[in-house]
Length: 309
Ligand code: G3H
Ligand code: 13P
Ligand code: ZN
Image (cartoon, rainbow, N blue to C red; front, top):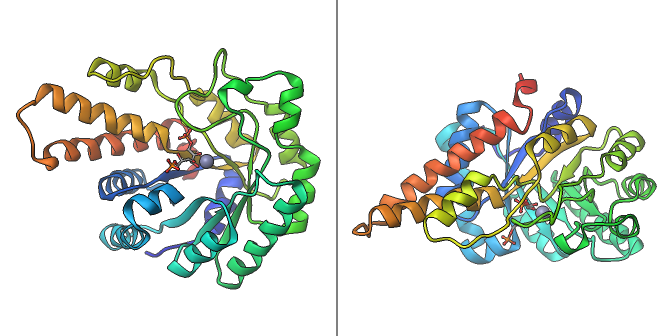
């Protein structure tokens, strides 16, 4: 039981065509819900912390909560920085005990992304920490998407191969049509699997990462809306598409929005059904259970967990 890197998790996932869930954490209940699910399903686990999460909860609390989860459950857990935007935040997280960091240089030129990623890789590797980078831009809903726009934003397979060779990065987030949040597609969901296959063919030993991989399950959107929410027209990546991606090198699947929806739906329901309650444990407890349920659903139905054994 320890904080571990993704190295052996990804080696196994690559070989057996499944993915490890990487879930965003912001507080104790979210961490506990996710960890309970991973323990119940005996599934490998990445807990990831964004810059926003660090600001909200403070880094020391999050690190200590994850350490507490390891003590409590005996699980091996990877603690990962999500979307680190510069060298400094990556260094800080390495120094704070994270076992994996993402340097997100996708907004920079190809050359600058290589330079920055290399700088982070050198520091992180010297401390035994692994690095994820990103190449290409996640398409927003408005970019959805003609061929020219695709070629301008999605990951170019030959560039991916050059990028990995020049940076020595451990895993690579690719842009093939997913995006963050609850509004991923205006019309029919579309992922560029031909592009993903090509990337996987050129760099078969590099674990690929799918950001923006929430499905935005309709029943959770409906539950939010039924109990006073206003989330019209939300749509995510169909579960079948995520399962397909795991066959072409995708070893890490990033999920935040689906956790937010599960938690919010449960709390909204509780407030409507129990208007007299004002003890936070009364609604945060069920919210934690909702997180656990969502993560168990992901492990069983989306990450190809049957291949984990
Ligand atoms: O990549 C985005 C994740 O959902 C984290 O979101 O920056 O609001 O914490 P956040
Ligand atoms: P979702 O918004 O689809 O959950 O994606 C989360 C993510 O990619 C975090 O890095
Ligand atoms: Zn992301």
